[in-house]
Length: 133
Image (cartoon, rainbow, N blue to C red; front, side):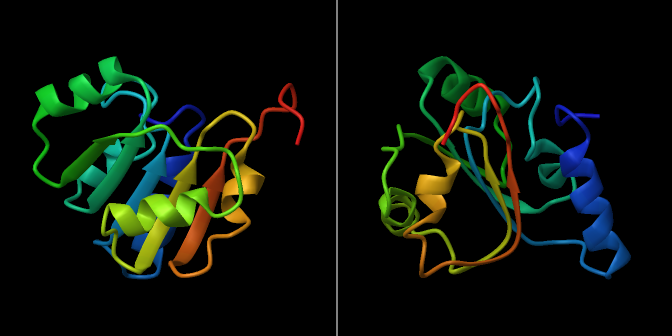
């Protein structure tokens, strides 16, 4: 299991169940490829991933891993409405996303508010009740 609670593996199994074995993942708060990665199980199956991470050490770990279908970007996301849409546009992320992972410690609602252009089939949001909305 690569994701923290098996959520990514469950989502990947769901796609396999409906006959989809490839797609596009976007993850904000990508962490590292070798530690609690939501995207890694998809990347191992040749899905394409667009990963955003604010910590340069984690970005370097992704770069060192040299995963051909992982696009890693060192960016901090501003916690306000419209900022996620702005980053998706800046990074030229395809409009149709299969999975959107948000793991940015409490500001997920604000990022989803204002995301109007990119379509997504599944959104997986980390919930941390110690970081109130």
